[in-house]
Length: 428
Image 1 (cartoon, helix red, strand yellow):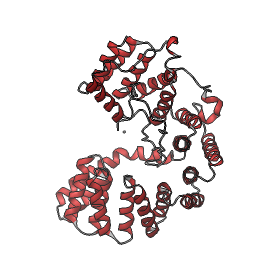
Image 2 (image 1 turned 90 degrees about the vertical axis):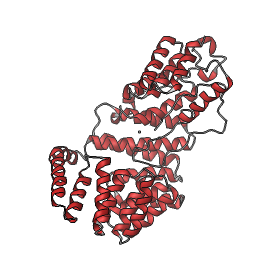
Image 3 (image 1 turned 90 degrees about the horizontal axis):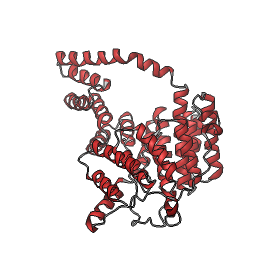
Image 4 (image 1 turned 135 degrees about the horizontal axis):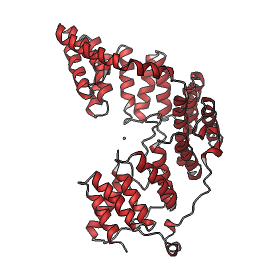
């Protein structure tokens, strides 16, 4: 998914007072969230810290062991555990066996509570709009997203949401207008250029769509989707050789793409290459036969507990980002904990909780989250690094070294894991 986090392991590197949690309520994806980079856990900062150690010749990091006598002298490591209610006390939606109704009710409660806390905030209205959209209430979603833009004309997710609805409804002119506004605010969002290009092509502006896609593909973010769409536009323009090239690139990128194989078969047919078209079509038909049962199951389960859980995770995680952006870390923590309860395999929520616990010096809570992340992604070396640092803080030196050995085994060429192990080994 990008380098997620690494602990701030130097007591010498103080956080500046003005640091506050960043808002990631930009909806790169419904769960987008994810992709949230927590303050104090960014890989770049840890790498700089290591470089500083090497440059100054410092002997040890602050992977200080935990003991009671250190508490008065190291308040950043003090255990000030919050009262953590078990998930079941929040309601049936957070249990191991929720119903669709439970999940919808919990999502609505989270959105309503957020709006009550921030009645004039565009980011809060955006969360409510997303919920209405996923519940199928398009008119209300439109109203709420329009209210977002009234409160903040540069509300990128609101422009995107309105553009997406216009796209679905076939209003290509409006879709182009909204996607352009969204792209201006959020030029790095990889979703927007593809939908804008498709809307441009549908509205009779294929040349603009091609130019946009070509530029987008140069960034490396468009890849399969951009190549397939480019090939389809070239087919519509009867530029069959260019279409063949685009679909061949798409197949090379993902040989299992049915859209790319079908497009390639069509391009070869238009070029008069019957045998090559037949070969590509044969591959496409094999893919369709192999996935027909899976596709049918997905359609049948679209509104079941799985889908409702996905929506609930989206709403809770976005609500957590809004609370964090407005400085309410206690409420943000609650929402991240609820997100983790809704989805026991959700990584972004646990990354955010880890950041909150580390900043507050809640080492035992952080350790529990580290263990969950380690088990969810056992091949992610940074999880083992963080786990090792926490174990060292808590005085479990042998276990810390074993964890760091695991990080080294996963990425033997990465020097930071070797350096971390040596520092823990040499620490008193």
